[in-house]
Image (tube, rainbow over all chains, first blue to last red):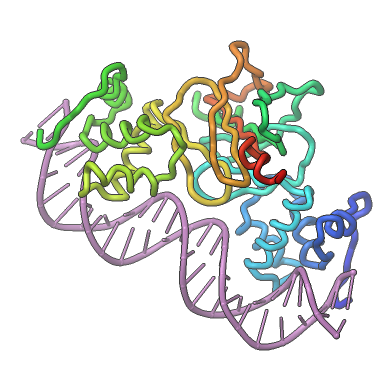
Length: 146
Length: 146
DNA sequence: CTAGGTGCAAAAGGTTTGCGGTTAA
DNA sequence: TTAACCGCAAACCTTTTGCACCTAG
């Protein structure tokens, strides 16, 4: 192995990738670590920039490849909030995304234990659902009041 | 006025545009009518193609301009379901979007009267929220079973 | 050993912008 | 009358693809 692997303690990234039919590579490990380090819902471009700090030769195509593999094996979720770039979120618990239209920040809010539960139309097999709440965050609301 | 206006009966498009500070134009009327005609959540590109049938000189830039105006004055919602093009939905009632990962179709399901209600974190001013349910529609599920 | 992954560069897809002419109010 | 809007074309941003080389299993 040509690079340090630095496997994070608790996660089972290697196993989860294998289960999904994907190989474990240093790039996938690193992209996932980048997402875990700051849970601020970065775009692929932002993940690319952060990844290059420790892995200068990584390419944009590889970042997309890694993100897609992580999404397909259930370690990461895509978050679509507005026209423009997709964001990525490594929080797999049930939660909604609060998006501030003023400053663009996104934060997670866990859903109550017995979650709202969307309607289950006959025949439709639900895989997962995403709740995106749009509005103004408290910081921006305060700033605008003045 | 250089074009037929064909104002639809019930809606108050002209007034709603004016309230939002927008002008009423034949293009905006037509783009909105195109959305109402088939509520299948088309992309801007698809709206452009359909609009050109009756208004051959309309441009893509104008379609985006019209869609944005309609969104800003509360007549249309943007729907972000996957990487790629944004879709547009003229249904302003509370509902969620069911997206079939197999065939790409999207359909609306009204939310129960006393809707799920997302958490309301202190200070965050909610404007609206979007619920997107991903899965396999009944047609595709049946087809795959065989 | 080899299917799958990587890095690079070019292409494709989707959206925005600048500009000269037109029009709703 | 005039700020807003239109159509066109070019620019811009995001994502995908093709290809030669490499590597995890």
